[in-house]
Length: 341
Ligand SMILES: NC(=O)c1ccc[n+]([C@@H]2O[C@H](COP(=O)([O-])OP(=O)(O)OC[C@H]3O[C@@H](n4cnc5c(N)ncnc54)[C@H](O)[C@@H]3O)[C@@H](O)[C@H]2O)c1
Ligand SMILES: [Zn+2]
Ligand SMILES: [Zn+2]
Picture 1 (cartoon, protein in one colour):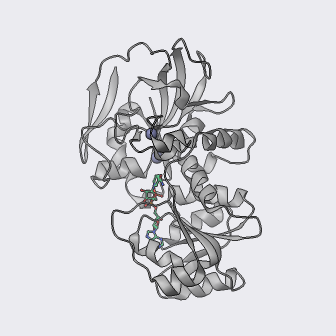
Picture 2 (tube, protein in one colour; picture 1 turned 180 degrees about the vertical axis):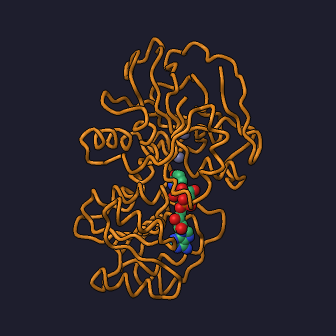
């Protein structure tokens, strides 16, 4: 069957791979219908993703159909349409045993640390499938991106009476915005790119945005928008270590700061004036939990999340290699590109 492999940075190749085997007792054989492309795939393509190894079949945002299930599978059946939770956890480490399957000590994310879904059919543990009778394959492929934002907002625990500042309005920031809004908290979005802030105001209907130039004006504007209190929850979705270090200054006293963006660099900040004086909590956010997938599917089914603005670009499987480089350029306005297998 056909597959697409990232041989090395900037080099995709159409390959033929062996047909998927019969599913084991806990597994399902799946037909891949849609693949969402995200920043992780783009960083892997550009050679900037530290967890990515080559050669690799990418694809972790998947909308799939169940073709066959193993003897012990009860959560899905032949013909079901599913979203895939792509974090393949071990199930027995200390972290998995406590239910934190999102940060298993030996987690392998599909398409990043092991081969993913950019192929026609694949085998997965059935417990990684989340079915829906209503969602399209494209919507199912979008669930994983939304799950990253859902988990990050859960980590921040905003209350309806609070202010949430989201820094970085890329796809991950946008998914954070969806759940910050659902929490009822007043949501404010900061970025250094005006095109992205315009998208937030016009398409996501979040009126309060702050264009940061790093000149101190952004703190004044945030102070005004929060009645002088600053943000109870700050979620940094930039991946910039400078922004992440600076983000403490935007937190209210007793605030929570969530790092959903990822950096390989050191983050620096002043302890006494920033962290200690305000008694802040800094929390990481990694991947998402099974319950996040279930919740998001229900929210889309009830039209509480509108997926239309999200999917901006499309390509057929055979056009993907040619189209991909254009998706790495911000000017093209790409939020989410979908590949149809
Ligand atoms: N926690 C997880 O499990 C998880 C999962 C997927 C992606 N990520 C990470 O999330 C981050 C964001 O991903 P994305 O695809 O949205 O990236 P992106 O590059 O499309 O978006 C980042 C945004 O941040 C803005 N930005 C950068 N530096 C800034 C600064 N100093 N101040 C204000 N804004 C700034 C950029 O203008 C851009 O709009 C990445 O670091 C990615 O690796 C985390
Ligand atoms: Zn992704
Ligand atoms: Zn584990």
